[in-house]
Image 1 (cartoon, rainbow, N blue to C red):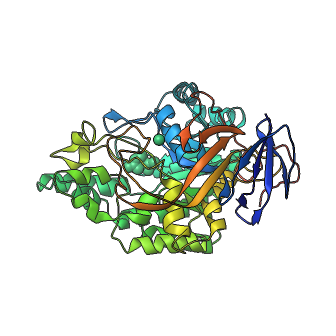
Image 2: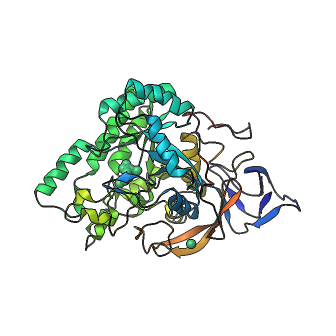
Length: 472
Ligand code: URP
Ligand code: ZN
Ligand code: ZN
Ligand code: ZN
């Protein structure tokens, strides 16, 4: 049925204006001052912002890691995402040396297919670059629409790839039209520091941060940038946490390197001291890169404001405190790395960013949705409010106040790292392709309704129903 959103204030990455939106058959069909259609369902958005649905470009759902499985799967994870205003996610598909890429993708399709409540795509992890991988890559990019490749420079003896693999991936990506993503930390140095700390009897959660210094992130970021320049390729650095890494991005960009940076809410509002909480509670804040000294937060906010960082991922990778984070009692290196962030990603950026005057309303949309859509081949089908685009829309109340808590969140985990934080602004109603997923703060979506997103090549626009929209 046709729906009309009336009286709202539409916000895109470039414009803020009052207009009505009509949507039908999953797409936006009309945007005009006063749309009248007696057959349509009318939704009153008075006093609300009308945002394009958020795109979370960095999630790990139903993923084996650190000797256990992430607690949130594609059902609970995407439901929580929707509550937070996110209508598309891109999840990381893990691969195994010696095994086909295709089988890895099939595994990830099976995880998501009957569970996702919003649309989803996959990034593909690269652990080796063999002739077979190169052959398969072509197919993955053109047939599966997987146009982003992830290389880990850390997690030695687990995910870590060497520089040769990264360099070959960069070359292949340039040729095939994909964006390379890196987890930039020097895994070899970290491995040495971790072993040394444990030998010296330093086993508490805080040593997770102390053995992964910001220099290890800065060094890897700079190295990846240099290899990207040498390969004349393109790079997206995930979860940038510190000043050292921001500096490397800035310098590379000055040299003309095609490089992009993502940060995450946790680095914007939490700091290293959280890892020192007593009774092993510091383990709740163990992820990589680690939380940094608080002064880095200003650097990250400033980088978002000035465009040195362009996107916000959640890096959702959730584990229960009891029974999962517990695995690292007596040895911080065994604490599963990651946190539950998917639900509060957008609200935190709105409350701490827009409300506190650190970024503009339009920047909020750019950072939470539009830029990710453009970088990951979803624009203009996703990432904006325009005729012909998917009707992925968030009605957002900018004045409502709430307190983040595990008691009220919708993720499957037993704690929330932002527990007690006061937030202003909250999604009230969320549409995915014109259908309600959240209606007046109540979940009304359906598992399995989320569609798989085949994405366009890097730098190319995904065909939407309107021809007038192009990449910018
Ligand atoms: O600690 C983290 N970030 N866990 C998820 C995996 C990764 O490195 O992104
Ligand atoms: Zn990572
Ligand atoms: Zn991650
Ligand atoms: Zn609820």
